Amino acid sequence: MKLYLVPTPIGNLEDITLRALRVLKECDLILAEDTRETKKLLAHFSIDKPVSSFHINNEHKVLRSTMERIRLNQSTVLVSDAGTPAISDPGYLLVRECIREGIAVECLPGPTAFVPAIVVSGLPCESFVYEGFLPHKKGRETRFKKIAVSEHTTVLYESPHRLIKTLEQLVQFCGPERPVSVSREISKKFEETVRGTAQEVLAHFTTNEPRGEFVVVVGSAE
Image (tube, rainbow, N blue to C red; front, side, top):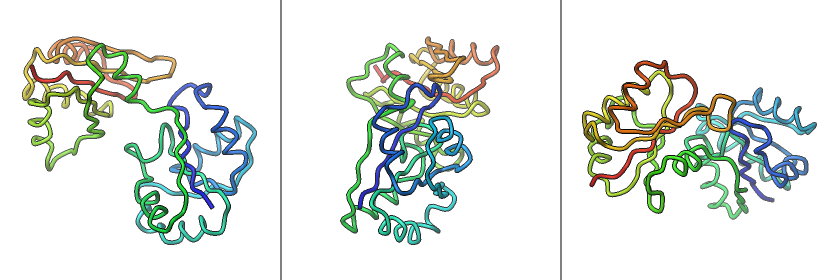
């Protein structure tokens, strides 16, 4: 028996790999963050497989029953709505439990939003820190202070309604001249990357309403 972690497109459906399609077609069960979204993807590629829910809100509750289902199948696939499972998405607990029980785990390479964002940022990417989504309240200021003195490029995920606040705090804690690159809607029709100082990027999105999903790349402290 084996658990496969299969990355799914973050925008353009052409980004799915031939290997991912083969594994989805050959598996016995698919665990999905949102079964509705996954069924749309499967229908597009004419794949008919049983799909069960496994999302961030039920991950702890259904872990035991999910493990029982994995044991009953030769191959089980875990997918998130978009990108690689367990990267700011559910999956870590399931992977850990499979490893504990000696069940093979294999992660296919594929779409992940922060990789293209850091590559097109023009900022050093030989060494970087991935922070994912910052906490909304508790510990948020501490994380910004950490970013302010970091010797590495930092990568963040952000939603449109919190982007302005995040850029304002980058100006506050890292200084208005800190280099920043913000990519939105990666691999989608309206993909865009805005580069400049923290103050310049803030000014851009203050004038242009943030829409879509964002990856923020912050240069290191000098």
